[in-house]
Image 1 (spheres, rainbow, N blue to C red):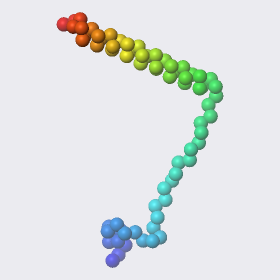
Image 2: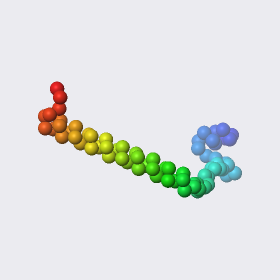
Image 3: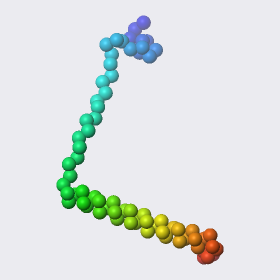
Image 4: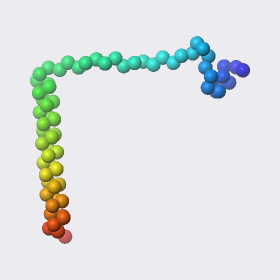
Length: 70
């Protein structure tokens, strides 16, 4: 058997090895102003989601009570 036939059968030579590159975790260091700005963005997103949730709840209430426009 030649190496191509061995490879196609799923057998690999003993010296063959696949080397995987592993990602090294590098912690991100951010200054306080950047962190505060990111926190403010998160708070604004949460407030926006709450407002949409409230609006959808009101629409569902009107729909369930039959007060939705035809």
